Length: 354
Ligand SMILES: NC(=O)c1ccc[n+]([C@@H]2O[C@H](COP(=O)([O-])OP(=O)(O)OC[C@H]3O[C@@H](n4cnc5c(N)ncnc54)[C@H](OP(=O)(O)O)[C@@H]3O)[C@@H](O)[C@H]2O)c1
Image (cartoon, rainbow, N blue to C red):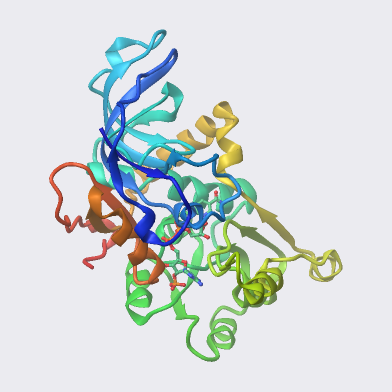
């Protein structure tokens, strides 16, 4: 099969497809032929050699996708062959096929396209855990989502709005701002414009919950917006750009990593929390329990992932470069069959037509 093995760290150009042996499902595993692979920001960091949760190189990148179970290992019900699934994994999804424990291949949403299914697991689980398992968002509360037009952000905006939250969204372009309003944000602001946070403060009067994924000044300003009894869930640090040979970047990274002063939290009576899905994966029972709650909510509220641009599998390098350009809206995917960019709608979510 074709796969993208990360052999060395570097720019998008290190991502080249090569021929590797097909994986064989072991005991308790299923073999899935992937239709789409979802790209996550963590894989950009992995490619740069900066992701703490990555395994030792060389390895096949990729944490999620959608496809069909093609074979099963010992101990797995053969009736699963042919099932449409979404898969979640630490790595292995930048490939035509993936073998993984059967518990990590969950049945796909029947009413989603295969592209939408590939855009679901990591983004929606991260948004759900942050907003509900950690920050305990309640109807009527004001929520701020940063990097809101990205994969996790578009999931969070929809989930929070459908849970009755009043959602404020931050993103880096006018096009993203328009998109976020269509998606359900009560207010959306461009944090590349001056006085963005002052305007946000004026309009919102402060927020009860923040889902923060940028770090640096965005984290610090968001902390200032937190109301008494507020909860901040930190799920990422997209602005950090550590470069091995650049001491200035070490200093900037040190400066911009979110920090918490218990004294200032005490002054306002607030909480800061953080999450990483990787650690949740190690607890399959808890993961499945959360997934079931999320699944039911998404079906009841008729929510769909916002699928952005789809690249042919062979163009993983271009897909990474596109994400790094900060122009992407919603989830960026790789397609395994055929090629060409499918303008998938994510229609209910106002899917981007980039
Ligand atoms: N905790 C977890 O388990 C978990 C799981 C998934 C993702 N994450 C994290 O959540 C964040 C978002 O992930 P995602 O998959 O939604 O990513 P994404 O779709 O690629 O969105 C990332 C967005 O981050 C924003 N950003 C802000 N500052 C940036 C900078 N200096 N360089 C590049 N982008 C910057 C950009 O939007 P604007 O230009 O609009 O700001 C960019 O489009 C990432 O930090 C990721 O590592 C964490």
